[in-house]
Length: 337
Image 1 (cartoon, rainbow, N blue to C red):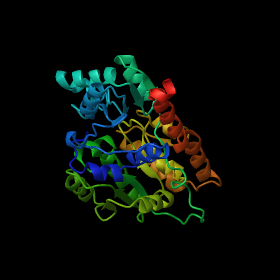
Image 2 (image 1 turned 90 degrees about the horizontal axis):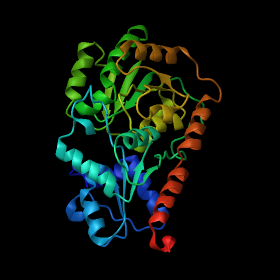
Image 3 (image 1 turned 180 degrees about the vertical axis):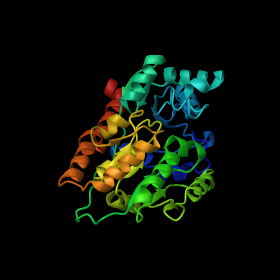
Image 4 (image 1 turned 60 degrees about the vertical axis):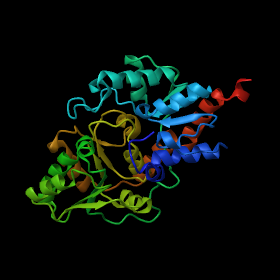
């Protein structure tokens, strides 16, 4: 279930939804999409739900019909409690906590998309059948360019410019840090892609006040092909995040061979491994220093391919497919019998 009126578009546009839908179909299942109670299929053999907060109706259908329910996603137990009050489980009203706790106990399998999420939730709440099932990056599509890299003049990031998302993804300190670097390198740009949200005007005003309005580009929604080219061509992908349940864009950027400036928060250390320029998300100074280091450091031979290989070896679609197959097989009456 989804709070988004455009849930069909989300299933089509959001990469991790698309990958799971693709995998489920490749495993031989007929997939019926649902984003509202009215579109829920009451004849389904199994309910596969993204997000515990959206699971009550699938759980109701599953329990009434004695059909298994699998729930996956990021639980956000203590996410950004200081910076964005009200976002995490710990800040929810009692009745929402009750719903979320009940979902963890009623789901037949709870699939956590990172080790950090799994460990935090299972250490603090009772969970029925927790399973670590990492997200996947399409490394056949997200890969380094075969052509020689042209000299780049811009940093790149992807985020929906809603207030909450802009804060969580570290967009404000990124713009502030870029301003300092831009004073020394007058040809540099910062390209921000992603759906325009309610905080866009504030971000544009910030860039204007800092004197870089003509060098910070908010390009809005872009195609997968355009995103791929940005990952391949940018100086670095910059996302000094406060928290990531996985960090899909970071994984995509690394798979394309991009240098990544990010922070050791949530699951990001799992995804980035040793292939990141680490900064504290609230440190404009550290972010600027990392940007300057990227500008000053030529890309070493084999560097891009090493990043791609890291993601391919740890976060492939094959790994996610194997995890989902194992879970679904364990819930199949035929397999049990």
